[in-house]
Amino acid sequence: MNRRILLVDMDAFFASIEQAHHPHLKGQPVIVCGDPSRRGVVTAASYEARPSGVHAGMPLQEARRLCPQAHYVEGDPEKYVAISLALLNLYLTVTPDVEPFSVDEAFLALQGRHGTHEAAHAIAVDLKRRITARFGLTASIGLGPNKLIAKMAAGLAKPDGLSDLDPEEFRRVFWPREAQSMWGVGPQLKTRLQSLGIATVGDLARAPAEALKAAFGIIGPQLREAAWGHDDTPLVPYHEGVEAKSMGHEVTLAEDCDDPAFLAGTLLRLSDQVGRRLRSEGYRGRTVAVKLRDHRFKTCIRQRVLPAFTADHRMIFDTARTLWREHWNGEALRLVGVTVSSLVRAASCDQTELFSPDERADRLRAAMDRVRDRLGEASLVPAGTLTHRRRLGHVPFGPVSGRPRS
Amino acid sequence: MGFESLSDPVDVLTAFVDGRIQPLRFRWQGRVVRVRRVTGEWNRREGSTLLRYFSIESHASDTYELCYDPRGPRWILSRAWSARK
Image (tube, rainbow over all chains, first blue to last red):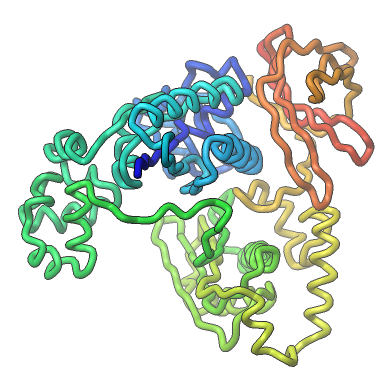
């Protein structure tokens, strides 16, 4: 049966959206970040900014030093998610088999008469044209017989590229390249591979499977198969959904902070966001983790397993605050995060809890959720977050409140 | 000059083109801004309300973000960038 996989990768997605929406930014270096007047990190850099060495995750201060001439634009996460969903709907007009891979990437499976080389290529060309016509954006598309080759092909000719590889062509193109060009091989794995004398993808393909298994366990032989272009990972269509493994929020503070009241307020707001998201998506979790990064960029992540599954922000906050108190050394912090993992569906918990330990609190939480569902996230917030909200400003990917006029 | 974040109520003259709402011009700070083209559209949900956002370029090459809030109904100018110094 004919089958081709497409990986659609939007080029510099967030920065390109800003360039499309604000034509004066086209052809200019654009750096998307939080509030540019505050401290933070680079969310995305346009292709014009990248030659300066700026990349996502870099502290804004360093980006300004490397690329002072760039336009620094405050990002709008909700806008980017909305456009990502609109792109998803466009992909679904091509095939029902669409797997969102990230906010700016998606796998599409083409089968039957659409799955031939020629048909898939023509569909990819047309899809690129429709993306540009409707959104003013460009995408790089990779085509292959499986997700691995499609993903790696998409990176060959960015931006606005289209690459179609079969396993033989994949090996011809990638075997001379360094092992880190493999999908899933990062700097640490690269170093470990080098210690075994494996420098290129070709070296990896020719390495004995037993030696790789001895060095890396189960992923060793998988890496070797990947180097041959073999991949049987199934495509999970959008409509079937993927179970979440964890949910978390983190924030880079506007300035380094050692004020316990402010940090506690930040933890409360993050816990509230996580709890709200767990409840709205029908999950409960049992492991709470807190992430603390100090002004020297030293990061501490600590977690604790709860006695029961929860989506209650108070229980999440109590645990996060305890972890913070136990592990914070008093140094000024630049980033704080809260994550809940070990998730299960709420329905499976309800069946085991005939009598809720605190029905009144459950009813109160449900009532608060109904208010927020109707009036928005900022309509009702824990009182403990009010003082610090005035100082916190932009919270990436958090619920957005009305911003005061600047 | 950078972007300015705003929350200004504005009067907007609109048309419906192919079943889609299309801002044509709006009055802001005592002057009329004529829309050359809509450069982007997206939606944002605030509780049960669907807010519709439009990124537009004016004939003076300035760019703006307009938000249609059906609860008023009303239009809000949420962001502006001026090409003039």
